[in-house]
Length: 454
Image (tube, rainbow, N blue to C red; front, side, top):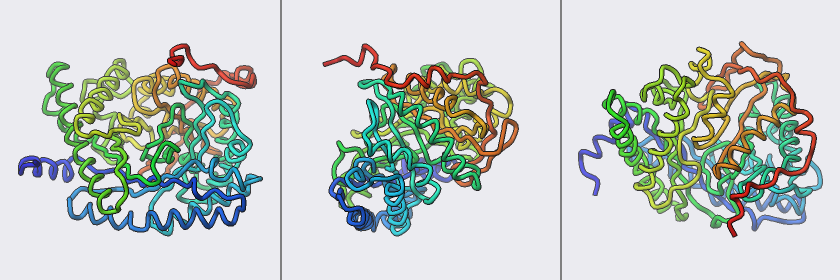
């Protein structure tokens, strides 16, 4: 039972510490929409999404009002479109038509993002996969709500370096296609290793083929709550620190579990998972970097940052799994630059570099996230950065991702404004030395020896 003290405590977390449910995401399978006729496929996709999610936004708003917990976003994830469109799409233009259908459906039901314009190519690309990947710049330039992701590696399969090379080119092309909005299309494009099937967070969400026809996944967020809790134990030893983070993560996850179960009941859709990631926003007091400083760092990026982040990530997971039987998605601590004021301040102060961020990704949930780089960065350099991050995920048996934004026409020292939850970012320098010979080899990096567990 939830007692009066816990109710008051939760109210304080909402009112003073930026606690929110970051997203309710409905996953929808589109496998039954596959059709050899493109027009028929478009109609099936639109109908399936709009009928399945017609009450999603209203239900989320009602729960938020009744429970007093903000639910910031309502979103949809769908089956990777490379699978759905393989039978009817013969050109990049055909695939872009499906992206526009997703966008119209998302607008109809009122969600802010729809994820799943995706391909899973850990070991190789089918013709449909490659067509979809090449269509991404076109698709993201024509849509507002569509998010795209490509999984190019896994611990079991290795890394598809042909896809890695192609993604470097596609990211640059997407930046050029959306240059009028400071290359915003790249903010909706993620490259993954070990992508989970049940991730509710954008831009990387898709509804995996292992999932039910429809599910409700919820992502919670509480950096401000964790920071406030740690302020009360300043100077205490690591045992006290860890216990405080675990207990706080438990409380935050219980809120997400409650909202997820209620949304599942009202919508008549099975409950999937709670993703307990600490997802920051540009708002002051809602920063993962500030938590690291509260642990004892002068700035995020200082010596000790990777150890502090490892501690934080682990304790968040330990507290969260006690609060819900179904924890999934990414679950840990996000470290996006543009979406975290503390990270932005650390970059501006010279404490945080691209290389240090890469080191931090070895111990956190995701990877190099929402990082603006010069628009004249070479495609092979972007591919090299992707390959490094994919290797971290493959060898460490974890999810890693890259969301780089080469801002067309801008360079180091300038700032790019994305607005809303996407925030703003200083453009960070990239290592000037090339890796063309490495990227142009082609083929596949084999899976590590510890993948062989049959």
